[in-house]
Image 1 (cartoon, rainbow, N blue to C red):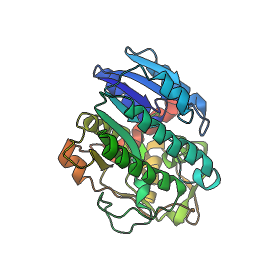
Image 2: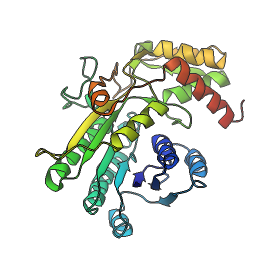
Image 3: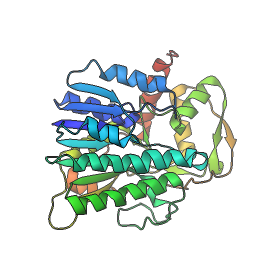
Length: 325
């Protein structure tokens, strides 16, 4: 399979690319290498990928749609995996136009790329559990209403789903959106709690714990996420009259208490956290919990990595990456 993958230097994109190459696919990876978090980490991920056979990297920004469409007008792909986006709920409070550019214009650019690929078999794209907003019914199901996002980031991800549904209807492009639930693991993102908590605990610095620790998250290990993405990629929705478009939750199906999460990091680092309790952050939600019945039924997705196994693997990678081993 010949795959175009956006966000190849990102956390999930890096791991998905590795998995596709390992099974014999070829991947053209694109990324704009923005500085939302240190570019050195993205470059380090690429340094792992670039020596591998059948991988080609090109630096592109999805906002520059004319240049991108022209670049790939004569290249044919079997599938597109669209993972590039401006991430972060809290960042969207102060930098809203970053999300309009990357997540709205960028997604539309990818849809137009897909429309220009007459033999494209599937477009898989990243959505987010954030689309559920302040829903209090748990676990979150794909049939739940998602009309009241509590952050601009969430609103752009819900808009992506609607845009994809429109293009699936108009142009019969098979598409699958994946609502990721708090992905963590080696080569992860420095803006995420598992990274900042580990770093601060190892350095003896205090960690901010929002909503006074009363938060739950459906933490999902990266290997489980990759297995789900690849399984979904191989099973595009059929065109049976309605738009060939599906949206799935992809999570661990097990919410964890934030304070329990911190205790696992304490055990893995061998150090006690200096906790600073703080009020709820704007745009944040109390709990996330994925109902994965649909993706389990349709694609055999079954997460296998409990927090007690996954977090220590991240901590070991983190210490090694930073030379603290």
